[in-house]
Image (cartoon, rainbow, N blue to C red; front, top):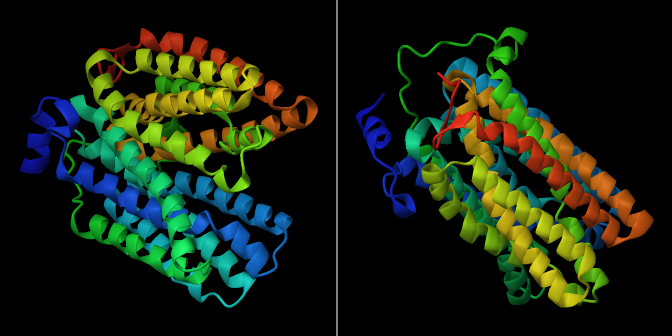
Length: 414
């Protein structure tokens, strides 16, 4: 292990990122810039496809579904490959590079087919980079600061998620609704993201004693992920069933009569709260433990669902969205930290790939179920069902409290 990484590993946890390696901060800003770029485009793309290129709503839905499914499946293989070759950065950089080079296609595309290809390649890039990047964060982070490391990346990523749509709104006004001009501006942060991971992030040198993995997806290797990992996956999947897609927050806002042009502010508000909370909560988990804070997050989700189900009007919506953003900040980074700490270091890429695949399928099922409940009984049934799944997830967390010892290591981890 290099001296700078070893020094980071030996640094005690501090407030607001003191002791986190430069590579962790760089990966956070890599996510921030790429999210700004992607969200600037994605916030406008459905409208552009339908009004500018004559696509149907069904075509837009099929494109998005195929793109996201491709990303989820790709994560498994890229994570496993990063374990096989023993390096993460190259694959993460390849994923960000694919996303960056597709961005100029959006303003240049002469036909619908070109945009479909660009969207598909962009999602392949997302799939390639996801698991290796998360495993790289776990490799770089000091052992007692993994919660802070994942919380920081999640916060910066979420800042990009709400700055992107806001930038798109402002630029559409500045350029008099010229989609292509906005898409050209989106190219800039994408290449800033690629430059950061290529020239600032350094791959740590792994200990010579670390086992080499020949086939990470072999049954014998998957068994080595251990029962704690699979229990975390179960908890996270139940969690995903409880929270479904944030699109239903937008539908709830629409039911309350909020003007269509202001409806996206619901997601901006939710992501702003999420971004503010994820990093401090991650740092706190390094001191007090992760499972207790995850239970707090599930309590916030139950409260959000019950508020959105039972309290009508803009006031109920505002409180529900605030609680929803808080629960995201209390949970997403901590789940990633638990995955990193439940498995052997040489299988972290595979673990993150499997985790993302299973929870991605869970999100798809949850969104379909939520849509069906909405059709049958309206918003109330959807959010009450979410509260029920969140309660089940909270109960499934209780066995983990006795297994994860202290602030970061499970009792049975080597």
